[in-house]
Image (cartoon, rainbow, N blue to C red; front, side, top):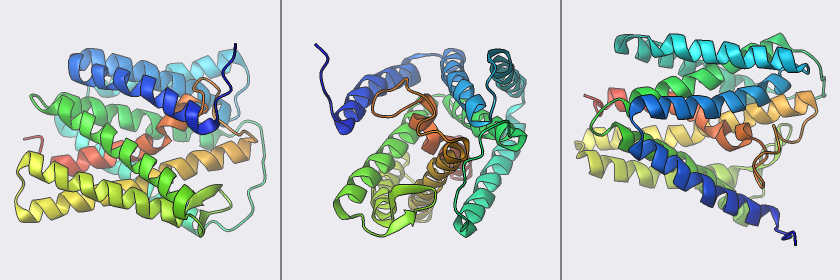
Length: 279
């Protein structure tokens, strides 16, 4: 007998299954195994991204997935000194996108079909978090714990935004892109992220100045994670899709589960580097 779950119940159930698997992978896999597992997950997301970019043929979509895989392999050979500049470029790209989305005031008209610019945007969007998280994980002995902190930060911000939006959400954040997003959700995400910034500072025994920087980093991460969510919403609307996929009940596709992470991971990795947490 099929259980008739609500969307929220499916969302919670899916999270209860995925979250322990993610935690186990982060804490118990060696960095190579973690990079491989994360890469396979992101390649599944790349398959969904190929549809957002307008590809329809199986061979063409497989070719795009192969391109993402090749980029991961090449960047995996990159010396550690070259990681921060690349993450900085990706992070600046997200901030530029945030400004563009903020100024967007034209109605979104679906225009399905091949869109090379949208397709190529998948390179930094998908490869950026892979590079950031594998680099964090390799920062032994606390690397895996830092990756786990990143995941908990995103989960907390997402959950706080969801419930604050449902409880107090009235003023719409970006009605053209995502009618369900509200400013109350953004404030809720920021509050949850700020609390975790205090936890991070206590854990790393940061100086008062560095503690303030950690809180600011988490607050800014909460904001940029919303940009990742809005960008995927824009691509889905342009392509005439409701979800990126149907693999995860209550969430949609893989991209729907990690859209916040794609924007946040490079920023958090950079912030931790600048805080000296990886030294």
